[in-house]
Length: 144
Picture: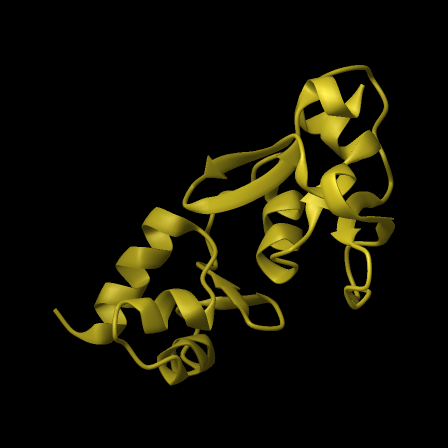
């Protein structure tokens, strides 16, 4: 099995791929670009790839944001939506970042950034793994 085939198999299991995921297996990240140019992968965002026919689920946007902003934690209205509390559907992704961290600049989706420090930022973080992608989110208790 070639490295390209192995990367495509990883994309089936993981749904979203970054260069760091490919490097972790000892493969060249340049293969992501080559597979994109050949039409085997689609570029979801800068440095983020998926299969062209990948099924999109309701948490796809949150998965993409968490992959692109590793220190970010889904909070407030977005956390309530993820935990299925209430009926509000936010038009922005609410994301907590540590105080002093650079503000994430994503073209899409729109972000509402909350800056937190110390235990206000670090306490109550849950990690949800969905299709190989992790979503860091505050617990229901902390969010409410």
